[in-house]
Image (cartoon, rainbow over all chains, first blue to last red; front, side, top):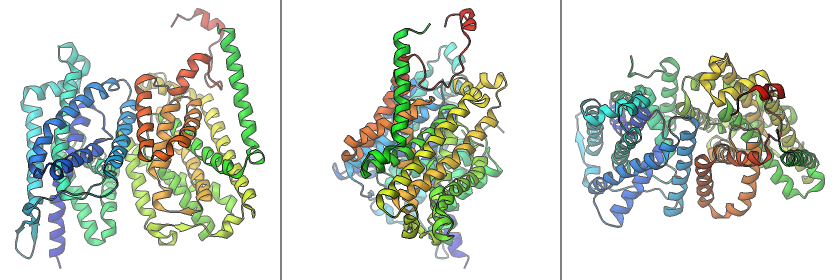
Length: 289
Length: 339
């Protein structure tokens, strides 16, 4: 009687790994640049389609395709920030929201025009079907476990990058005070662009795992954005380890909600988010206690 | 001093505006049914644009969840008329009240967030309301329900009469929305809102009660959105979660229209909605490209002229179409430093 629930709990925790991958890039750009990229989910889906082309047309394995895509994702984020978003960052909070909102609609409809509305998925081969038996009839997917490990590793690497490296110190300096950073000779626009590039590398990684884990279509972006956003707010704004906790909370909520009644899966996630927002708006692990 | 030529063009523009309003009031008597249907849709979109502009352009509340209250209004209207048998005309303002009632807890939640977080927060609320609407069996669950024919007929037995009545309802709502926005912006609170639009911290420093103004705007727009939902239901004759809570129709297009027309101005939403309907005649056949073009136009607008098309026109006219701003007296101007 208890076994299905424990099973769902485990599946939910693993799903939280995927959700953490969605959220790290958003957490980084929100924490550093203090703005939320509304097109975040659509960029994840855009990379998924790029992977689709690489795997189907050119015959790459999804893992190799993801590695090929990452440098381009960095350049995309860098260029986007440097040449478009930088023009509207800082002075007015309204403009970046509207601009990334415009980008979101352009990406969705561009993909719709180019690929049609069909749902797609990448095949992960043997890895996708391999399972790990935990006894009591509980099995977890190897791919899901791998996703979760990647999420933990990504959060750890980003945490080290931000708090233990030179570029991390620069990013934090610009994040704390743009004017002061510019004054001591840091080029804030360049550092913003690097931060956005790093954020887009995480978008690429998220896309690699998502394209094998779930179906996607040109309109999948907003759902991913909402998940990433809820994870970031649940975990506490700007807290990377908080994102992992937020991801797990959301994954478990959806998984348990779905076990209770499949129609409640998505709604259960949103409701947990709203409840936490009501009772603990600073999130579970706020960066500034 | 304003140049004589620009004063003349300003007077002409105001006369044109007044004549347009008069012509629109008489539209069902002058135009064929297809145009009346189109104009009804125009009025609904206009109300949505005015409300979104009031929030995003003045009160610093960028919502991406405006469609929530349109959907709530549509469902409430269906509930009052089809399920409870209320008077259909009375049900329209009641739908507005239900939207207001839902707006209160929604506001308490999303106002815990700021700027872009608030924007996505409103989106989550809209998503929750849409999913919840799909769980209401009495309303047809996920696939929705058609409005019973008897309710439709109570607005006029002949199709022409009915379309005219629905148009006038939409026209009256648009007129009320415009009047409300005008009076609000001319009022003490409106001056505070305009100050907030230009500089939020500065406005707070000189004593503008920002929280009060934001609450007033958020709650003030909800009934209008709900009533638009009721009118849209009368036009479409059915409710469904995905259509009544359509983010594309009631949020995405609206945001683009206001940005292109001119955010943070009274005239912007009007111009943006007009441009949208003109463009739609040519672009709607293009499918997804239509939205790609609108998105590109709006990003272009943000980069080139933030005050939108109205910002460009206003440079030529030298003043607002409707006198929203309080002008300093000539004596004050003479003493003021040059800009």
